[in-house]
Length: 196
Image (cartoon, rainbow, N blue to C red):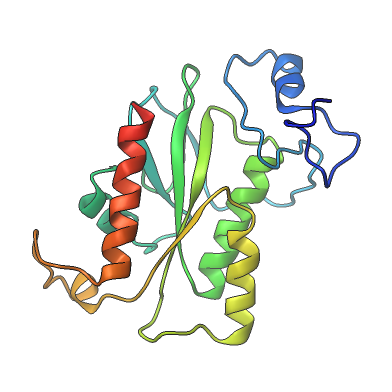
């Protein structure tokens, strides 16, 4: 196993290329954390839907009300709804969106587990956006710990604070957003131009 493609925390797993070759897939499998041996129980939060190859990046809500549509509108990325947009051609680039409440973090964790267990093909997981579920600066300790653990399961994580104007619909196109939120929107928008 090549040192650059091996996961140092796993010992006897196939490389992503070996796993793709073994199942006859022509979709490039990401290297980061891939382990087809991860046991995942239950049916999962997100269904899988066949999708054409997309040039841009899809934002996929890990659960209802995650903020996916709002982020898509602000960033210019595609709103992928609440389903994995799997492609049989070029893998679709996906960013998962979740709120920072317990259900949202559990749904984001489930999405990462299923992806890295090899249950979701035809997509490349670029990262996670965690959207604040209530106003305020800090999450309670248990949720902060859970958010950090879930964020660690993704190649990248962006955090968006509470923005009342986005919630109540009074934000207008072109209006200034809080600096941190504006920075995240800019970075997400840049993903689409990097992908093409």
